[in-house]
Length: 258
Image (tube, one colour):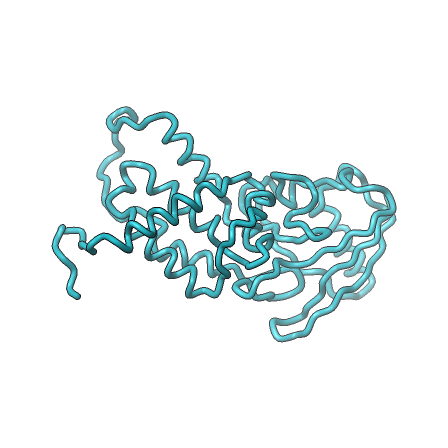
């Protein structure tokens, strides 16, 4: 296969950046998209040029690192697929492919296709955990959980934190990520004690990071590599509203100081 690549190049955070074009004529259809990028970098290195910087880790669709906007779509044209699971056979011989980083003010470009997604880490640090000590490992059947609840919680837990939802959203909203991380804990018995505090703290942190507001475009769901539903955004909105109306109490059940 022969392909022509148009790749975003940006040497530093403050660099203006530009698109540069490259041609490859030895692309094998069974290559993954990242293997094709490896081939490009080998070519650039041999020619004495700076290779393209891009994030990658597991290359198995689990880590969420392979963040690229390919021909205008987060992770490329194949639905519910990460960039590392995208293969060159999904493109035609002679295709022109445009590759850009995530575009969001909360995800500043570090270099080329690499963006700083530490804003997601800070949202998790704000409340995406259970602080109650559960003691020794309980018997699996000691806490009855309805199968539908468990399955829905697991659906939310499939979020890999890649940021495709933010890149796809016209407003650069992180609501789908935040909702998934809050919901998979809040739906289970272990996460109930902190459910409403969690919703408040995670949304507050999300807003402070500079993400845009959700307008229910549903582009996040359409381009999420795990197909996470925007119904979780509704759950988060409900929990946030209830948390805003309830009297705040601390873990001892006493009224917090005003």
